[in-house]
Amino acid sequence: MFDFGLAGYQPCWLRGRNQLASRHGPRLQALAGRRLTRTWVVWDETADAWLADCPVVLDFDGERLEVNHQQRDLVSLTWNSIDLRQTPRWSVADQERKLGWRGDAPEAVAAAHGQQVAAVALLEWTGEDEARGSVAVGLRLASGWLTVYNALDENGLAFGPLDPAYQPPSPGLLRRSRPGPAGAAAGESAGRERRRTCLASSGAAWMWNRRPSSPT
Image (cartoon, rainbow, N blue to C red; front, side):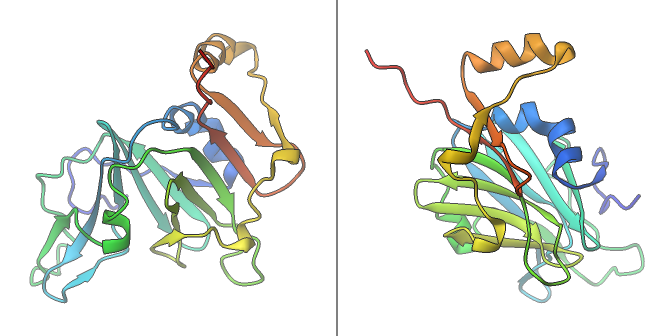
């Protein structure tokens, strides 16, 4: 398992939104309502370019989500495991490449820092291309969607309107989820703070919305 020379980072590769939601759903749900305070990518200082093979780190008021994609449909989500004081390494053989973390790139993503997360979604790509079936992590912010997606064996970042190939859920297709017996207590506790919704048909997204404030 390649960890980019980052002690403590152990990517766990999953495939499909059901595996991701089963393993990470409650923690993704808990991000709704938080602020996206910072993001970091690995920068190749030698080439002056983003090294998209390395994990993308997103910070939400101290809760850090680490996203990485590989092959055509694998994605790893990890939490609070990367020490950003460590210098990433691409390979033992490649000693000339100088890498470091940047929190101000890409500019469109950095411009979203400080915005509140209105919804978190696991979005399945339905386009007629090689990426079909891959799953992206989407954050709905005030100024648009931030999407960390599979760019065919590396990460891609998009900011703005959601690509229609993701088929975002519409209000008419959403229903409240019901936690099973094992997760009932956790689901009831989380439900007091946020509403979890998922696509009721066999469509392509799981989405958790921030619960609207109660009228006073």
